[in-house]
Amino acid sequence: MEKIAIVGVGQTKYERRKKDQTFYDLVYEVTIKAMEDAGFRLEDIDNVITISNDFWDGRTISCMAVQEAAGAHDKNVSTVEGDGTFGPPDPGLIAGLGSSGPRLSREREDRRLAIRSTAIAIVASVIFFTILGWIVVNAPGWPQFQQAFLDPELFWATLPRLIRAFWVNVQLFLIAEVLILVFGLLLAVMRSLPGPVLFPVRMLATIYVDVFRALPGILVIFMLGFGMPALGIAGIPIDPFFWAVITLTFVYSAYVSEVYRSGIDSIHPSQEAAARSLGLSRTQALRYVILPQAIRRVVPPLLNDFIGLQKDTVLVSLIGVVEIFRTAQIIQAATFNFTPYVAVALVFIVVTIPLARFVDWLVVRDRTRAAASAR
Image (tube, rainbow, N blue to C red; front, top):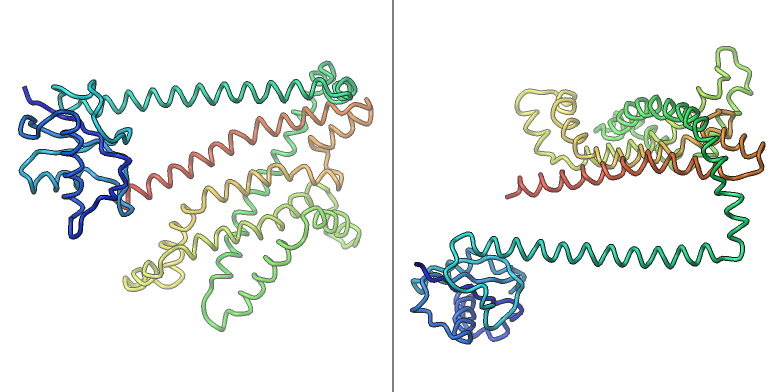
């Protein structure tokens, strides 16, 4: 049976490196020292597996490094990541392990650490929220707060009506989102157009983006929602829902255009040069080469903007749109109780948090793909 020694050589920082000593010779020396301290001789071992999480000159001791060090000494050496302890290896890790032994040992250790970390996190969370809850319920004004904000009968009585009103917010969100995607992309393309002839176009797009990013959204809603119908011009709609969609589109297009533009700027100029060398015009290169790559890169930040848009749909209640927040205000005015506002908050939490987790998942997926393509 092949004899395998599993040796931990982490946490040494390799301060004993000799002059002109190579990195690989140093790794080998530390490995042999650990084996000798544990009572093993190199000539009695068929294979040495070095376990390390340590760093030296900013590099992790890799399997390649140890194998190259072993090759210089005619010994079969490989590595796996371990707990980084220096000195005699754990006796339970030494003796007749097959090729899968170190990997399985590490997997068991990872599971043990994961379970331990999860248990600590759960206990800490329970303790924290228990203390916080005790402080809240023992506050002097807790009975009055509970009566004003946490009336269970009113909550369940008004929840169906609020959910029906939320459909107006959904309609606002969906219609405005389509318009924002198109208008924001148009602004980004206008700001990216090259050449002095197109400077007026770039200037207009820049002024638009700067102005609507500078103005508070609620101010734009007031100015357009009340100001435009007040002009009395024939053909201008007076429907609050129409102006709610327009104001949200104007405000968010300025932000989304910058997201698009960052994606366009992230594409290397060689992409356009390659497209032009194949005979594509500048417009064709933008349409078929630049924009598809740019849009894929900015999907997560775009979704973040649309999460904000979904929440800001409540602002249009100020110009008379009866959506979920306005409905809650009507109920509150009739009952003199703030519980409907709590119900509105819960509705948005239930809808928004899954979207936020979806965005996080997209970010992790894109990062993993980028790392895989870089290898």
